[in-house]
Length: 84
Image (tube, rainbow, N blue to C red; front, top):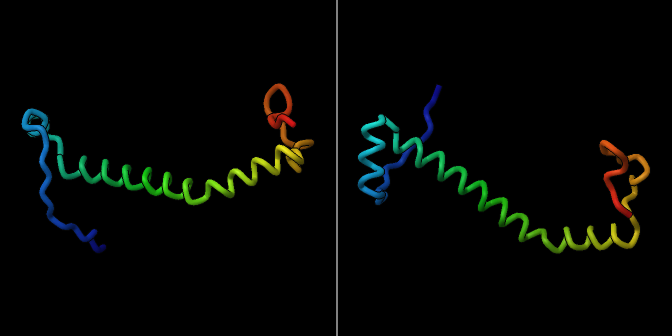
């Protein structure tokens, strides 16, 4: 099994937080990597939504004018989940 390529970097963090992490045996690199991956995913999601905002608006406008094509079969607890 091959490992993931890692690269060293330098970050500046609050000294008390770093001391507490060391005392509690928290792997700062692993926490930073997980937080970075989460931030990347969220940023990609925001970018994708912004890039596709016109398509979402056009679809919403179409649904406003025409209703949902599957409205008769879309159901949620208590009734239809689509409001015409």
